[in-house]
Length: 136
Image (tube, rainbow, N blue to C red; front, side, top):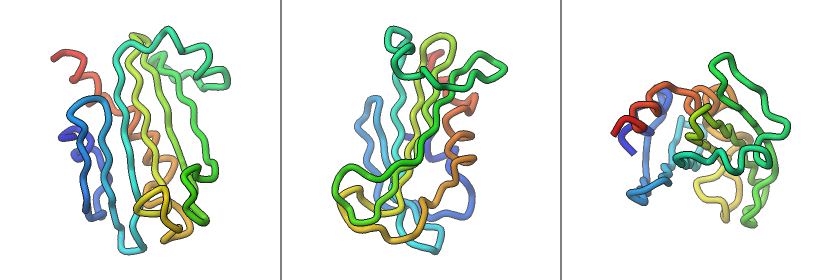
């Protein structure tokens, strides 16, 4: 959670926080245009599923695989969209960041798009700050 919070873009207000104490955390943010749920999942050594998760991924210069998607939400919220940047480092560390245009996946959209752009989601997922977690 501390790394996640540190990497969120400036200019947004962080509301509700959920920290599983493990691989998953989420926050509800608001940039003044409505609530937006942002989730992160950090997993160590997921190389065994790389082939199925990153078939159409882009390989970044450092060898990180990057898959992005922009799809309708799946939890029933009317008009909810789900944007994701999913990365896997060469050592198998996976960082997945998703954002929604609602404060919860199951409630109606509160804004046209998530508060974080695809560029911001990708920057968050590819940040070198995540590598520091590997060293602990």
